[in-house]
Image (cartoon, rainbow, N blue to C red; front, side, top):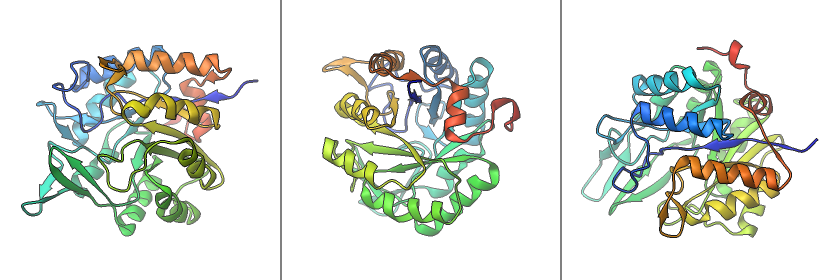
Length: 300
């Protein structure tokens, strides 16, 4: 039997706006509609970011709950909410004339959304640059531990998101070894974001190989390739034994100069998975791979 591959769609993210692409879904209904189309094309996990009525980022649990409920009414896709939030909207707090911070207390509300099965856990501190402003994304060791404890208590599976080797070897490895997650762990390796995130790495075959070799034993993993790295990085990750993630959160373009839709990116990823001889995991199979409860026994 060929290997089952989890195909994740990240439809919105917390950075791009409708001005960057008219295809970006931002309202709860737009997101749910897009997710349903991508689910029909093979996506088994959705990485959800919420937006306010003006299209800017929020982690308001009521908005997350509305999005999650609309998605669940139409699909059995695995729902993964963000605790990163976004670079605008409810998140930025001005520290001084030059420096902003993404509000921790706002970010963590993503785990309160009804129907959340997974949630991102960026167990590190980085700086994100956006439109000439620098934003601290501060997740100290104590905050990382607290968030992992909260997810464990709520039955939410962490998606450990890493940008470099240090992120793997520090809090991710230490907190999982301390029992704050259960095997299989799930790690999202983000490459190609080095122009916007201090400490992030570009995609090269050697860099991806290095990071994969240092993942804790018992880790399932996938790759997020930012911008033009999406296609080569995710395909390489597939060949190395990982899962695949695509979507407008990571990349707005299908090819040079042509804006993509989420459905196009998922359809292309599905073709790559099957043409390389793998099988696309259904949401039920994805839950089994990730160690999640079956949908009919999961909390509503």
